[in-house]
Length: 91
Image (cartoon, rainbow, N blue to C red):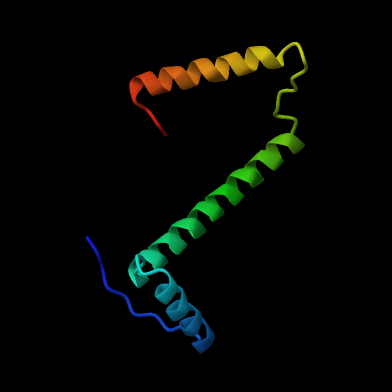
């Protein structure tokens, strides 16, 4: 489902937008706005996750690894990744 919206942009952005679309004929205004919104939402989500991680570190909720324990962690990560790929889970 799609919905039409109307937006107002400052003249300098309209000029930049027109130039961008002229230079990228495979793009449409709709696809450009969709990409920009998706990037903005992803950025906000990442900023939120970083904030959570910073709080966890402040509260001591983390594990330190050294030269001896790091290889075990990496093997667990690889094993989990292989298992997810085998299950078709690419998330």
